[in-house]
Length: 309
Ligand SMILES: Cc1cc2nc3c(=O)[nH]c(=O)nc-3n(C[C@H](O)[C@H](O)[C@H](O)COP(=O)(O)OP(=O)(O)OC[C@H]3O[C@@H](n4cnc5c(N)ncnc54)[C@H](O)[C@@H]3O)c2cc1C
Image (cartoon, rainbow, N blue to C red):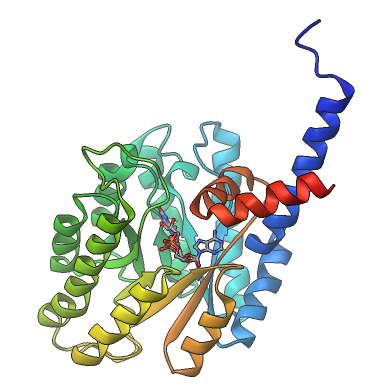
């Protein structure tokens, strides 16, 4: 009996869910593909590319994994038919990595085939460190056959500089982020300062090594992405670009939907490639919790709305 939620508990729960949903609307496009395509078109109208992610992670049921593959497969076709400038970004654990390496690789291969058919880029998101080795290994298997595929590295992880050098060596394409997962200190930097310092070190490698290893590069070929909302790091990247031989179209700045919209606009006006990561679907809770954790102010806004309500 004591464990039964009382009326006020369920009222609070509903209220919290509604307030969270309000925040989610800022960060995600909505529940289905039409919402995502609409958000992507909006993005294109502002001179930005769209990176679509169907929300979901740590899937183990065959039916849900297959549904996710089907969704991405249809999405690639719809992006092509609607002539949207955009690509997809997938999480290995939504494609079967929580079940087995082989299943995920098989599913990624199937999606890669569809991406080639429709001339679309695929990003592979990086999840918590328990998946890092497998994710990179799968990426190395795929890059041999398909060049329009990239993988994420996190400056929070101590191993990332060595991973980055190896990926550049084999012609890999990297999106650099700080990292959204809590990791232990043995493998990850604990302080913001260290994570930022490592980000700068990795930017340095990206802007310099990428040129050394690929002298003949098409000016429009994307080679890497700088994905952060941190103005200091973005300014640093622009400084490195100015003294490097990387073309302005060989890299892009990537942002999450709903964050730093003015900065996105300014960068487009300055002639940089800008892309917006747009998640959609019903599985918005883990994604929203990561966004909430990143910024105390978001938790404060949520708490204030709760009190006011
Ligand atoms: C395109 C893209 C793809 C990503 N893919 C991955 C991935 O595959 N794996 C992974 O681990 N992580 C991924 N991330 C998340 C990333 O690791 C960080 O957790 C996230 O970007 C916050 O770090 P930051 O670099 O923006 O710096 P922070 O130091 O967190 O923020 C810098 C400034 O940006 C603004 N800001 C940051 N977050 C918010 C917010 N939620 N709301 C409002 N303002 C905010 C604030 O002004 C803040 O001061 C991705 C991020 C982007 C932009």
